[in-house]
Each structure stands twice: as C-alpha cells, then as structure tokens.
Image 1 (spheres, rainbow, N blue to C red):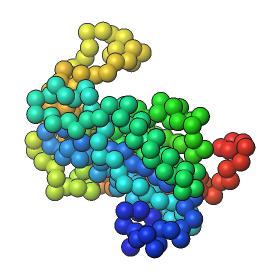
Image 2: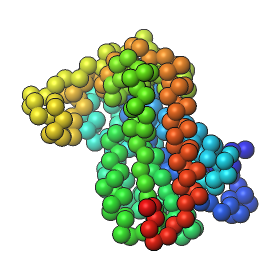
Image 3: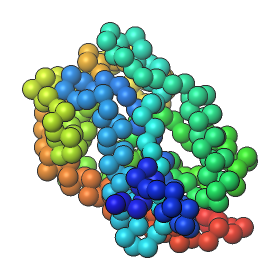
Image 4: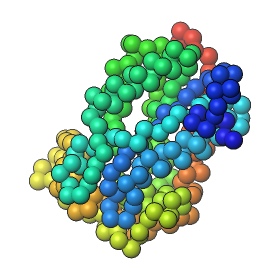
Length: 256
C-alpha cells in the first residue's frame, strides 16, 4: 500500500491524515514522434510524482499525490493529420485548477505543488490568477527544467520533444510501449523569421509545420540507463523539496 498516493487509499485512512502538502501532476495526451506512446507526458510526470512523494513520505513528510490530469493544452497540434490531440484550452485548465484548489482549501491543505509534464501547459499565469483568491500556497515545477545542469554529462543531443531525453525515460520505464525503430531524427524546420529562431520573439508553434512527425530532437542515442539516471536525480531533487515544503510553517513571511 502506497500511503502517499490518494487514489490508492481508503476513506478510513485518508480522514485521519494531517496532510501537509499535495502534489498535482499535469500531463497530456499527444503524439510523440513515430515511436513513443501518446501517454508519454502523463506516464513520465506520474512516475516522477510517485518517486518524489515516496521519498518525502519515508522521511516523515505527509504529502499526498493527487491523480494526474491526462489532458493538456494541445491546441497547436490539431492540424496534424491523425494527431487525435486530446486538448483543452488554458481557460478550461484554469477552471479545473480553481475547483481543485478550492476543494483542497476546504480540507485544510495549504500547500500545493503543480508538477507539470507538458510544455504546452503554461501554468504560471494560472497561479497568478489564483494568487489573490486562495489561501493555498501554489508553486510550479516543470520537470523538464529541473535537471538541465546534468544534461551535458548524460545526453549527447538533448532536444525538446520525443528526443533523446524522453526516449531514454520511455526505454527505462515503459519500454513495451516504444517502437524505437520507427523514430525519425526529429529535425525542426526553422522559421522564416530569424528573431523567432533566436528565441527573443515567441509564438505558439504550429506543430504541423515545425516538425515532420511531431518530434523535436534526435532520439537515436537514447538508452534505458540514461533514463534511470535522470529519474533518480529528478526524484531526489523534488522529494527533498517536498520534505522542506511540508515542514515549513506558513506565517506572514512565508515562503521567505
């Protein structure tokens, strides 16, 4: 029995728990090149949530992992033939988050980590929207930003989507759902505008134009060992943060 996973517990157990913090994972259901499953973002973020919460719970932190939201903002995938992108709008995501934060607040949970596994889920504006409405402390972790410092020593050509990084995680933790032999090189088509290519002009990228098969980054160098090493670092870092967060007193200067 994994006591830190809400969905696996009974009412008899949960009602007696003094929950100090909760973790809400956000995934997505979308194509990942030709070789990875549509649930990649959801599988990855849920596994990380489990790892981190287990680490924190074993250290005495009473943290609860909430069920993963499997639908993300994929509105820029909808013109890809056969994409079947299960997409919601940012407004829909805001309404859902608002309701969940309200229910946690009513139950006395005052700290919530938004654990994001999909780049299209831009959650920080939603946090700002709720900042003045709720007493719940919200913080955001985009897992794909957590361990960039170790990438040079671990990956050869990290990319962005269904790349060496994500493929390595897939090979390590859901290998039966991968078809590595089908992967293309994940080459990105540059924009006609140099400012966009350089990154100081931002757009909502039309995925049917930017990539042949929704991959960005070459997955060929991926290995299961790289995926396991990365997940170890991610779980340790997030777990240690949860331990600190759970123990922290919420006063007039929190979180400073």
